[in-house]
Length: 190
Image (cartoon, rainbow, N blue to C red; front, side):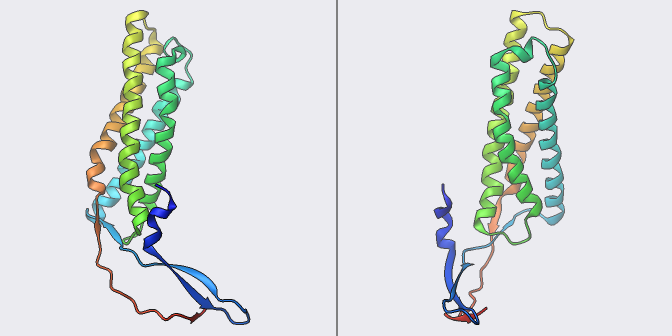
């Protein structure tokens, strides 16, 4: 899981620097390159889709935090909602990588986009689902007020957004590109 997972994708090359005694060690990517399987138009649509769903989930997590009601004071509703920020942050990093990715991606970036967004949206869906179940349980214990219904609606809407993101994860699959081997010399001048 650490950084050594991608160590085989890099080589160290020593480059002579004018005026310096020691050569400089430069890492060069020699691993395979990846590209999204979908068309460029569909990639732009997916970028917007994931960004809007992620912002929607953030809004649906923030609104209940600003309301004081019975549902927001119940631990089995608020603890999963607070824990949902962790997969939200992980998913936002993947969405950032999706926006900044070029046509060719290194293995690490391709894994960050597809694998992390899949796991993060799954856990985000789980945390929103636990909060929704907690709202249902709390409804059986007390009579909900108007603000309690608003909190429930926010968690249900967040659950729908995270389910939609999880359902679209298949469109983020990558394909490996052909890598032409480049001849390299041992000592180059920088």
